Image 1 (cartoon, rainbow, N blue to C red):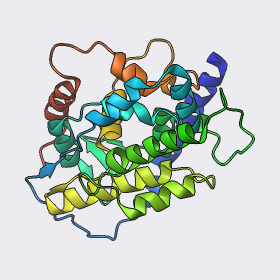
Image 2: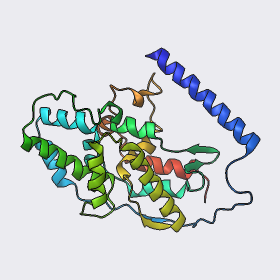
Image 3: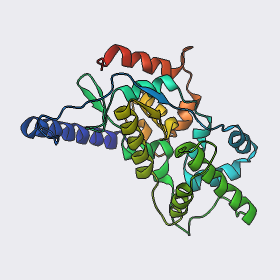
Image 4: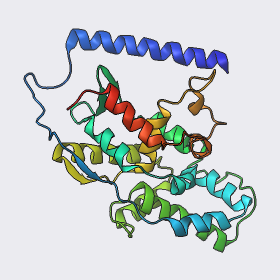
Length: 268
């Protein structure tokens, strides 16, 4: 395991060196003389759906039903108990660069990736479209319907919360595609980027990406993980569960992140 992590670390270093060298030699892909005209002040609405009913249903399920759900849909159920901090999201949008599709802090750039979101949701462990996957226990039609409807509710109310209190038809169609083996992570990330771009360019608006995932992603980037630098990419590690169990200081974790931005990021 340690040898594999070392190889990944070395490979990432090589890629980073190549990226820096290429940018110095060829510049970037923006049109020469292009100047971003972005609003100085940003107000972002991060209002979320009321998820108390979903939390109550999840708490009523037995371990077998939860296991079946996780095997089918990854760790998306953890999203319903993650608190979204509006100050953190607003700070993140403030430092989002629509041209480069990344957060910019001084000379450092950072952007969520498909691999990171897949690791957070444990999507890599989900066998999409595999009809031969053995379930922990046989399910009745009623239980299978309940599990699928619960997943659909999470996708419509948490992951793609475009219309508060309602599930969009597009989400239902997308959910049907999951049964055909479609990996949801690229779409989740694309919707996040689209919403970040819109809020940053307009200087206002409602963030309609998955705020819970973005909240965890930015904080997990600064976690100090002992010995294992790529702990979150281990198949036996559940990042969202660890986030919920982590003992944060008295001030909220998002406040810590926000103070970090204020100290180290340049004023826009």
